[in-house]
Length: 78
Image 1 (spheres, rainbow, N blue to C red):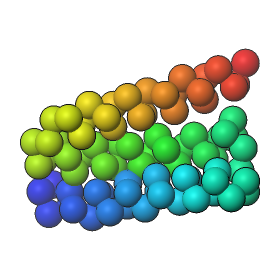
Image 2 (image 1 turned 120 degrees about the vertical axis):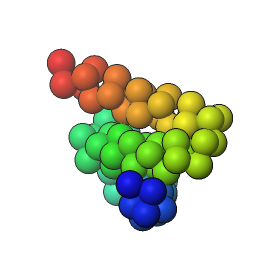
Image 3 (image 1 turned 45 degrees about the vertical axis):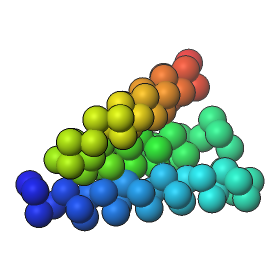
């Protein structure tokens, strides 16, 4: 898993940047499933990477980032 960690970090970073680019350029809405899923998967992938690096503040950020995405997905589903 340690060799997979850097690749997951790059995937997560790319997804979060892409989500931010799409929302900033008004290509997606903040309530859209695609935006929230990109943030959730990005946070999870990046979370694995920072866990293996023992970067605890960054891991806390990814937990919060992912939690916000899950909350938004559930809230917008209703």
